[in-house]
Length: 320
Image 1 (cartoon, rainbow, N blue to C red):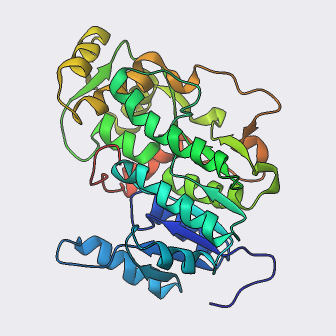
Image 2: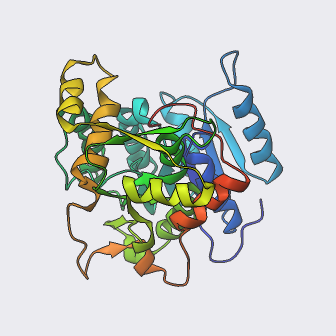
């Protein structure tokens, strides 16, 4: 892959995952020599992942097959790149300690972005199952800082296409929609393609080095009731709103076995407590739409138009 002047070489862990594929495509589109560290294909590999790897190779992505336990292979790969982005799914979050160790050994990485792409975990206190979930991510943040690795932490908030699929179930004809709590709490829904584009931009921005960047464009702040009403306008349908009271969600978080208690705790945090909007972004904080006013986030209104014309497929794993 020919390297253009002024471009960084970017390595992505989890590049075939739900958010990782958007990062890979955005990196290539921005002209960066792009590498993906992925598990070797085997009998359990999904056909969709094989298709994705073929797509990546067709656009000159370097795919390095290996396991996270292969320290020397990871170090050798790191020596070929400048920036490392992890998009590993939740079960693999603790494994990022192995990536941190390899980055320290390699000694050449200019920026590391660990796998966040959700809420700003250092600023919220959700129900215990979600709190335990976030504690694993906090541990990676603290290990990155302690290792002295230049970093950017991303608070991308909700993955919009995933949550539109989850909340509105646009692929089936049901006439009822579940509302969590009273439906009034504000959430932040950002389209996955935008998260990919902004993250690649942030990873190369000196202003974002050793900082947290939050993705909170005003046009993407919405309550469940507002989202449902907008969908009703788009579709010309009327939906029955079925409410799940907060006390029921708290009880479920206490009685469901792990890991089933995590999704309900996430929903409580986002759509009942409104944790994504529970803290202020001050003028000296970094917010993506302010950092790059020339770029445009896909609005919720525009995203729902996408679902009307060419709906994205639902994610294969809950809260991946």
